[in-house]
Length: 52
Figure 1 (spheres, helix red, strand yellow):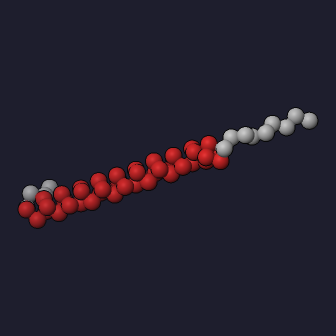
Figure 2: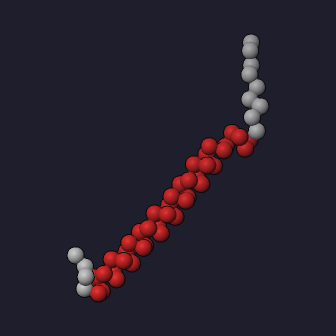
Figure 3: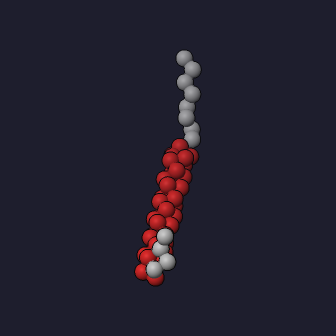
């Protein structure tokens, strides 16, 4: 019986998951910042009477 030992470290095993979570977190922060920036611009344009 040929048993292959998985000798990778725990960090190497979980690195793709950790990188995925980091990317998701950064993307979420960027989307949140973009949303509030656009929302603020909309209200500025609306208050100034230039809204579409």
